[in-house]
Amino acid sequence: MSSEGPAERREGSHKTTAAPGGGGEGNGAASAVRVGNFSDRRLRLNPNKDHKPESYADVRSDLDPGIYSALERHLPPSMLELPKDVKFQFMREILSKYLPEGERNRVQKHKEYRQKISEKYKPLHKEIYNMHPSSFFVPSFLEAINENTEESFRSIISEPSPGIYTFQMLQPKICDMLLSEVENFENWVHEARFRIMRPNTMNKYGAVLDDFGLEPMLDKLTDEFVCPLSKVFFNNVGGSSLDSHHGFVVEYGQNRDLELGFHVDDSEVTLNVCLGKQFTGGELFFRGVRCDRHVNSEYQPEESYDYSHVPGQAVLHRGRHRHGARATTSGHRVNLLMWCRSSVFREIKKYQKDFSSWCGECLREKKERQRQAVNAMRKELFKKEGEPVN
Ligand SMILES: [Zn+2]
Image (cartoon, rainbow, N blue to C red; front, top):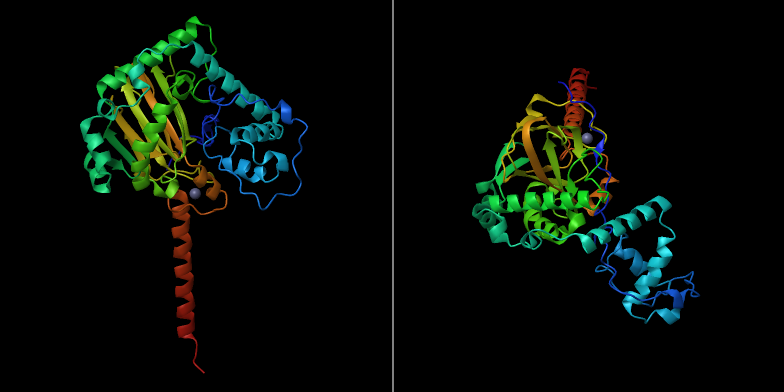
């Protein structure tokens, strides 16, 4: 059994949309309330247990909304009955002081980055910013999703290797529009001498779609199209609780990235759709699903699978399914990637040690332990049978 080199390098350390409610959204400053008037106010040490805090699930923040509800009980009594946005603004100012400096700068910079783009970039195809399923997807995919049963999904999906699902998804027209929109964005970036943020630490080319206005469309794509499939196929890695995404395109070929090393994605579920154009090579090679602890372990022959991209066709797999992309030997290949994440799954994972429901190596170890236990029991039984009975 060989291995493809270390996979521990988690692709991309971007957490831009990792927090529920979206990360640095530039134009989300919904209220213009000034906090200055309240600067003399102090939080109370003990919470007001009789006060029923509001829900902050709908506010845009990098922090968990529960934090605001919890903190609301500590507000000075004179503030408790003020409008929610005033309380939110006040609490946000306080909490921002506790974010690590680097994190605060990163969040702020990203917010400004998106703000600048949204002010200055003129979209080429307005129609792709709002999703119309019938024009986006091929009819077979749409029908299967509408029916929403495992049987309907299986009727359009192939599973050429365990945990790897492929299916026809996007209409050629949408692929073309996405390609030209990305090209248009990159031309604008170039002309405006704007410094572009690349999708992750491994790709030097490509763009984050969420950064130039496509976040709402991709939210809908995740909620209404990736989630139903993930619930059925990836329930054991948080497929039922996906709550954020990182959406981007990657570009391969001459004057672009050539290939991509062996790695795991920073996602629970990854959707990878080939948009085009003409190319040869660029196959994905998969080598088994692994947890953090086993990410560099060897693979079994049955875990090896190679996939050739077809424009419009999607591959859906676990983020922890180790993979890489072979060199795109000619032409130009562009793929749309959606890293879908579950904050709940990530939290629960911290308290678990055995991932045998999805990690191939954890499962192998578990079977080995069971085998040894059976052997030990067998030995014990034989010993007892051989002993003289008093
Ligand atoms: Zn494991």
